[in-house]
Image (tube, rainbow, N blue to C red; front, top):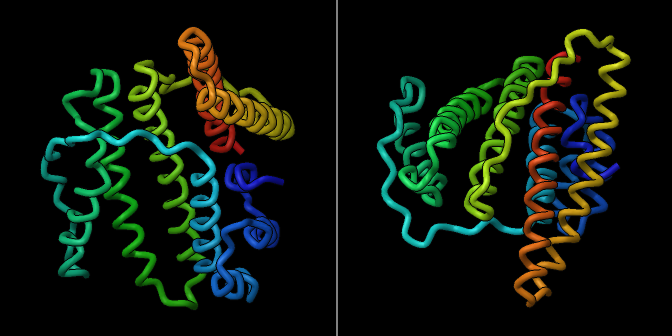
Amino acid sequence: MEIKEWLQDKHKDYETGVKLYAESSAVKTRTLATLQRGKNPRNLAVLIKELRQLSKSRKPAAPVAKKPEPIKKAPAVKTAAHPDKETLIQKSSQSYFQKVKYGDLPAELRPRFKRIREVWFEMCDLKFELNAVPPEKEIKALELILKIELLDQEKEMIWKEIDHWKIHKSLLPTKTEEDFSSLTGQQLYLKKVNLVNYINKKNKRIDSWENNLDKETRKEERLKINQQINRTKKAVHRHQLDLKKIEELL
C-alpha cells in the first residue's frame, strides 16, 4: 500500500500507517518511537499529519503569487476559553491565504475560496477543542480527529481547484452527477477500490508527464504535455469527488 492509498482509506489501519512512515525517507526517529508505542487518538492524529506532509512533498509546488493583495478581515472566532486564540488564528490565516488574490479568481471559484476560509476556521476551532480533551476521553478525541480529517480533505480539494486554475487557467469540476445511492455495501466497496486504483494510476502518469515537461524545451511538445496533464487532472478530480460520495455512503 502507498501513502496516498492509506490516506484515502476511510478506516486507516494504524499499524500499516506506522510501517509506511517508518519506510519513508523523511522519518523522524523521535516521532517514530512515539508512534510505535501504540495507537491512541493523539498518535493517530500525528501519524495522519506526518503522512499527509510526506504525500504533499512528492508533488510539484504550486506557484505563489508575487505580490498578494491584503485579504479581507477574517470572520470573528469565539475565544471565551482561549483569550489569545483569535490572534493566533488571524495571524495564521494572513499567511495561509496570502497566495490567492480574491479579485483575480474567476466567478466560479470565488464561492469556493469563501468556503475554504470557513473550513480553515472550523478546523482551527476543532484543533483547540482537541487540545483541551483529557487523555482518558479517547472516543471524544477520535471524533474530533475524524471531523478535522474530513474538513482537511475538503480543504485540499478546493486548493486543487484553485491551484489548477492558476497553472492551467482551466476549471476543475466542483461536483459530480453520479448517483451511488442504489448500490449495495459490497458494490460501493468494489467501486471505491476501482476508483482508488484509477486515481493512483493516473496520478503516477501525471507525475511522469510533469517530469517530462521540466525537461522539454520545444514549445509544441510542452503545449501537448500540458493539455494531457490538464485533461487527466480533471478526470482524477471528478473521480475523487465520486470517491468522497461513496465514502459518505459506506
